[in-house]
Every structure is written in C-alpha cells, then in structure tokens.
Length: 216
Image 1 (tube, helix red, strand yellow):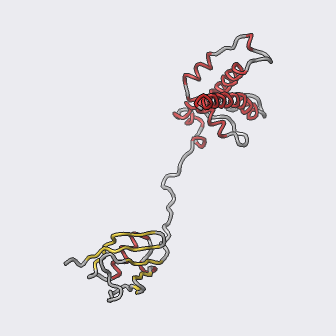
Image 2 (spheres, helix red, strand yellow):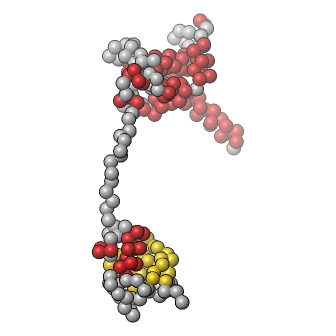
Image 3 (tube, helix red, strand yellow):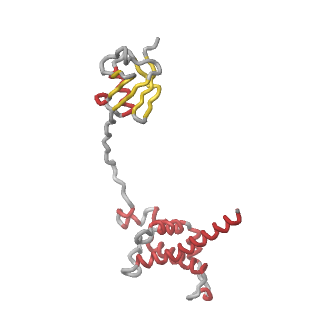
C-alpha cells in the first residue's frame, strides 16, 4: 500500500487540488511543497485540518493526511525581489540623429509635434503616412484651378490638407523637423492635421451611418 495520499489545500481564494503528501515524511516536507505552490515560507505557514494544527516534525492521529482530505493554509507569501532589467530599453528619440536616419522606423514618419491631447490624431497621420500608395497618390495630386480658392469644395480641401500633411511628415522623416515657421510650427502642423482628420472622420461617420440605415 502506498504511503502517499492526495489532498486539497485551500489558501485564501486559491485552491490547490491533488497535492501529494508522503505520510512517512515529516510535515515539513509537505510544507515545502506548499511553499513552491503558494510562496508562503514554511516558518510562516499555519496549516490546519479539521481544527487540528500541523507542526513541522511529526503527524498526529488528528492531523495525519488521508486521501481526499482538505487542509487550510494561512500565511502571507514571500515578496519576490524585482530585479532591474539587465539591458535598459533604448528609445529612438534618445539615439544620436545620425543613427536615427538609418533606422527602419524612419520609413513611417517622425510624427508631428504634439500639442495637448493630439497624440491619437498624430497616430492616425502616421498610419496614413505608412500607406505608400496613398502617399504617392497624394504627392502626385494637383488640384485644378477651378477647385482652388476660398470656395474650395470639401473633397478637394480634404485631399489638399492630406497632401500638405504628407509633405510635413516627409520633411520630419528626413530630419527637417526644425525647418518651417519658427515659433508656431507645432500649431501650424496640428492645424493642417485637424483640417485633414476632421473631414475624414466626418466622411467615415456618414458612410457608416448610411450603411447602418440600409442594413435596417
């Protein structure tokens, strides 16, 4: 007959099922097993079954494990020391400018200068910039003279603003972030971004609404 039995151990909200105990060994061996499961060191463990406390050196008739028995474990887990990373992460903006020029991420644009809560809108622009067919189409686009001026139609205005954005992103990608209108470049870039993204979002919203109505 085997001297090992399987028991259930409850520790707070945790339940460890089918924990194997060798009754020929000292209870300390069982507590060592519980340490590997819970992280509670044996010296901090308070282990009970049917109201009987389990010591470290020997089993008694009241606390000797039986097949399917349930034990209650109390005690706080040992705090694991958090080791600092061996290699600190290095961000693109912390690299020398000469090294940044050769990074693959430069192909996606450097992004615009954030002003307040404009980071999400900035991300949309960077995603648009990463679509090369869109970038090339906007680069080649030239609006007709009839569509220019103060009465520019919304579609042309959207495309022209997107074209300006791609040009700004291209300049920043090539290291031209410092060029442009001194002092107000951030405001000018975000202004161009708003002119592009707002009509784009409005158009998408209208298309989705129309599709929803048709579906109903």
